[in-house]
Length: 85
Image 1: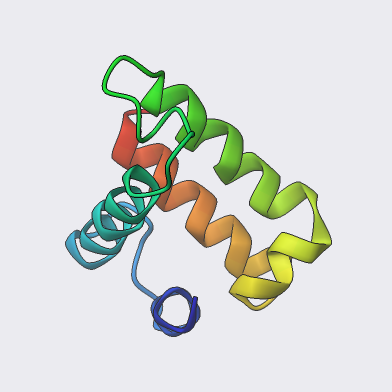
Image 2: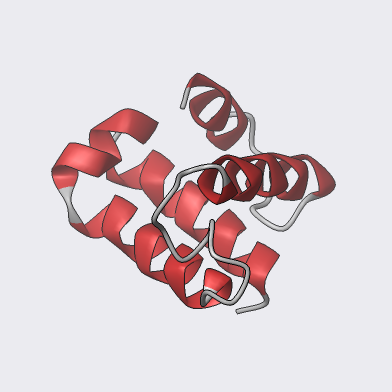
């Protein structure tokens, strides 16, 4: 989450190469969590990532991990760009 906060405050766009590299790393991390759609080869990875991305902003408990709603919004936008939304 520190990497996300630093990148969000750097002024780069959520669809920048830097943000997309971090989004890829985030999704790779999600794939390593057993029992989730990300870890299931036949799971809905894109839908799972979209849902989490929206939750990061909607729930202040998650947003706090990314420096608040503004930082969580950056994470959401980067993840949505990563999965093609």
